[in-house]
View 1 (tube, protein in one colour):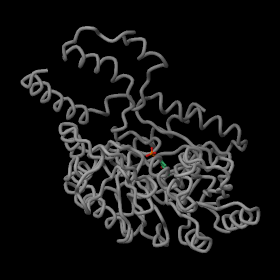
View 2: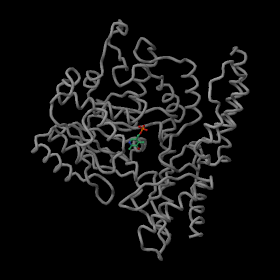
View 3: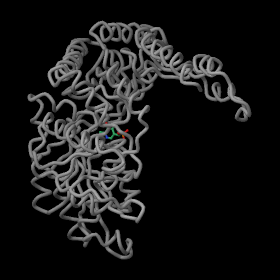
View 4: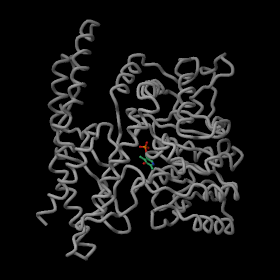
Length: 470
Ligand SMILES: *Cc1c(COP(=O)(O)O)cnc(C)c1O
């Protein structure tokens, strides 16, 4: 492509981007295509001759867009948000333009030093202690793998790294029954073993029971196993339950067990001083992850991983072949802070976002989202046909349709599943579900960047309307 053509299409695409976001509500929020519908429109083989950009772009609009679920729609209430913002998108364009590989300080000093400074800002913004260092990873899943690998190496004096697992004993890991699936995935990958992951029971608020944790650790020690790591969740995926960090950290300190905090979604709420109670006990935590790409208006991917002892992390990951040796001293080489060698310049978009919103701007939006959830919670509590199924500490409301004339749980599960699919088929909103205590639970998350009160009100009206056929 010639520079002049790039310029022309570049401007057109920015116009398209702006219009897309302005009119995103006109699309069905959840893609309505059937399986195979997209792939059947794609040629079996790659084109031999280059095709004109217009043709590619019109196929993007006609083939790809119908198969997109619109995460940036303010009517997106599913899963957790994967938010973006105008300023983040602009920074992403610049990152792409530079196309820099930010694996070591030398491969782009600004990328390394900006990452260092922005992660200090973020650490202070969410109230982590000053002795934590930060690095940007792609996802919380990866951050948790890094954490458990470091825990594994620390407990074995870095021997598994050098001589492999052999017969080094059984290493047990602990989390609650409501913990995200990425923890189980991580213990599999890290070699700790799924069978050695203890899923500790939760209380009526779906938070880990510290007494049960203590018992499980004690019994594993009695059986000759090596308790290696505990993963506490601040904001579980099902219901945003908050594990009691202080009590968990006391147990971990007592038994000298590595403590990792998964706050993938809820970490953003820590920019609000009134939510710092969630991390009481943080001084005794070893590592902490949260995703600005979820609820902090920074487009995917951007996962903030903080660690108290970066030397342990670097010692776990460091590798120095001849072709990577450089002369710069006293600098960070972030390739040694995680799995990947090549790294994107993700600090740039975080820097743009934090500066453009300002801490107060971010706080305002997050508080607004929490208030939206709270007002819907009140309406659900007042309604005789609906029932709240979990506390609403943050931006996620767990509830179900439960009219006075139906008692059977199976029937309620069936009706709620039907209700959710009916709602999603309207294209006017998108919600997903979880199961809490055997109850099919509708989840509505009020955390999308541009969600307003009218969107939540409309969703609530629609939910009520769709039950009228039952
Ligand atoms: C979303 C989420 C994850 C996974 O995040 P990725 O960045 O997609 O890996 C892990 N834990 C919790 C609590 C989450 O909400």
